[in-house]
View 1 (cartoon, each protein chain N blue to C red):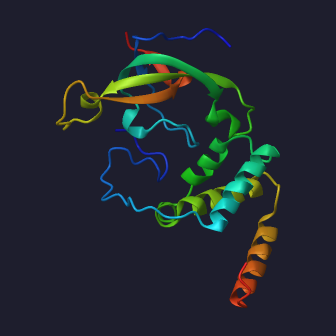
View 2 (view 1 turned 90 degrees about the vertical axis):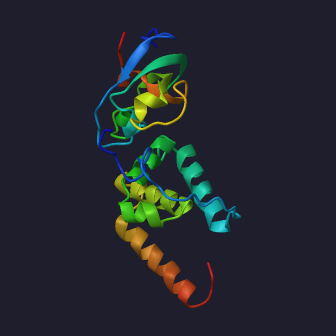
Length: 95
Length: 108
């Protein structure tokens, strides 16, 4: 397995795409910017092994996104966050 | 917000009240769970995510109306047919046999 591309504290943007296959990224988070909270484990990428392309492993990160970034009309505290676990191939740097 | 992928992708949308009532697991629901685990152990499916894919391909009506284990059952059947483990006609024939047995009052 290669080294993690991202480290805790880095800003990342979640890709905005919709492959027509199970891919574990909720539509409300696509295109949004968050911060890496930690590097998690590795797991097979569902988009690949469901199509029969083997089971290549990919690193997973926990990404925190402010609620105010996700919902325009959010009424709660500015410090409220959502935490999502996202595969590396869905993330790009937003530093 | 991006376009949703499948009827499950509802985060952020109005969903109405949540049914919080508890219920016991029926025998057939344990059987579906057992079949899913057996299919994994035998390598007939590669990962739970394969069944998630089947569930996400359900029509919005099916997704709304089927219970949790009915969704798993339908996804498992679809996956095993698409992988050639069983045929659609064998599945339909077996379902017909069970239906006739139930209608004859012999239970399962």
